[in-house]
Image (cartoon, rainbow, N blue to C red; front, top):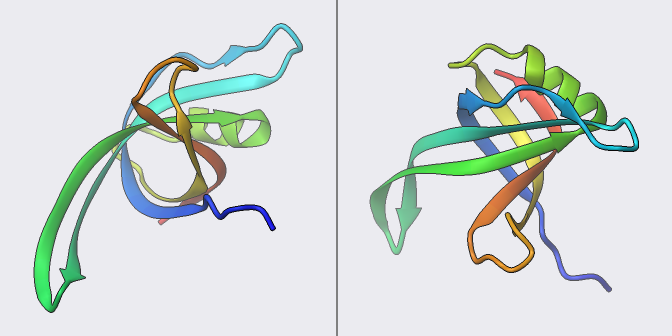
Length: 99
């Protein structure tokens, strides 16, 4: 059985790059998401605020490229290193829904 790596996150699109394509012609859209929420931890409420780099490919990249900055989104995907030898993470989007 494969280990689980699935993220579902409500976030706001705060930045996006210019839509580009791989040499194979696959659309790629990179950007930044901002998340703010209150989460329960050990019986206490905790304020959670963070930004995360995101990347989408194919149809999801095209959809993300049409979203205006400031759009609230429900994002589903998985975490992966942003660069092969780096330690920072990126959220690879497999599904995007406007909220």
